[in-house]
Image (tube, rainbow, N blue to C red; front, side):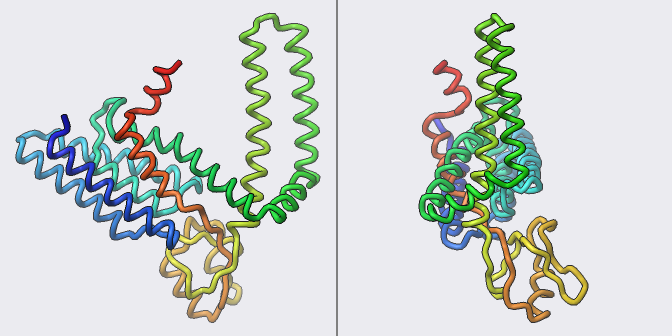
Length: 289
């Protein structure tokens, strides 16, 4: 049975994820005040509960959850997988949910769910984008496939795969080893074409010019933005800062090219609901084997 403390934590997380998902879908932004409020609320509520129960564990688990959330958020942000809003939301959820050093903890279950459900969500979203822009997508995908570099990669991959298949059937007798090699070859091809698929979607659906008046903190700049000979912002920046936006606006530049990501926070909401209903997705999948 869920106690009042856990119920309050779950309710706050759900309300925050619903509100954040709506704003992400509408504006492609998650308000900083929401994320920072979550972090503060997590530490404050857990501090109060520690005092009430005369136990250090609620606060300690909240701090550990925040640390884990920060670590994963920074990894995902600096590898370009998540935007700043998604990353900060995970920090807030980490502080609220806490980490009690168990595999089945709500935070760990949520993170695993985000990995699985987030991947499915991202693929469905990009697949829909491809269908909506099918003519452009088909043309650009074909162009990518026939660039000299990708052509060489495909020829080399086919040659290596063919050689491995010959070796596999002539010299390897173990059925398990054969299956493993076959799975590895198929996985490689899936990843190669998936990479080209994602690059195509980025090129035709996610890269666009916007007015500098609509620039917001965290936007990803595609081309270098220069004022005179000085570079003010570029693709090397991990999201444009408030100071950079001011300099661009003051320079008189009217438009800049940005890369717009998909609204990913709804996958957080779906993952959280999944965990509440079904529990740890890894344990669930293992039980089905």
